[in-house]
Length: 92
Image (cartoon, rainbow, N blue to C red; front, side, top):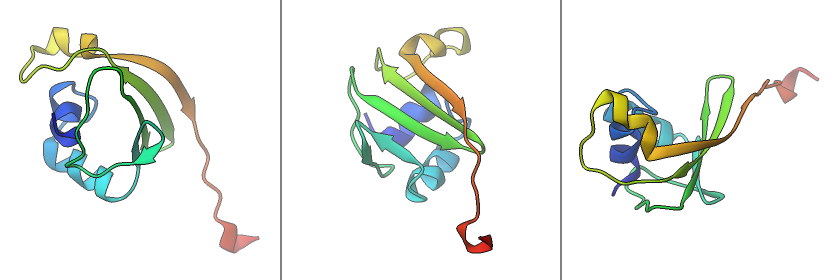
């Protein structure tokens, strides 16, 4: 399954177009490597998402073409979630 579709179906990101934008900005990694929206993902892959001031690492547990809202969270397991503060190096 494509990365952008997984993010939308699993409801990690609300819209597929937003998932594509975030991945095109280099804010998503699959198994430690920067990933594009078209990157294929499979069960067992680890995704790291940088969204705002949060960094979330999840492991894909299940791949489904469609899912109900209450089942979406079963598609992944959160491994780590942390707040990240970005400092602007140009100010120093």
